[in-house]
Image (cartoon, rainbow, N blue to C red):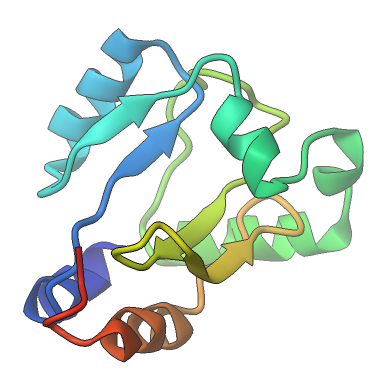
Length: 132
């Protein structure tokens, strides 16, 4: 997401990160990562469940998880302590100003990379005058 920040801001997007850790873990993550948007806590996992995000061992025990981990290591990313639900997969959702879901991208396995071009296209498709 950090690579998309400039383009998302230019497109008029308002981004909110949501994690499954406690509120203090979300605040710590925001500080450590120096994010320009808020990080919220959903310790119950309700937002992830409503979005249809995967959860469980099947999304962690896959060869693709190893490939994703190696890609992250080569890019300089390191796993820090786990905060929240380690079984829950993430993703990205784009909502229009009327609250309608216009784009959803959910990880199939741990470490899946977002399709930044598709995410940005969805935001740009709203147009600056329609972005909430």
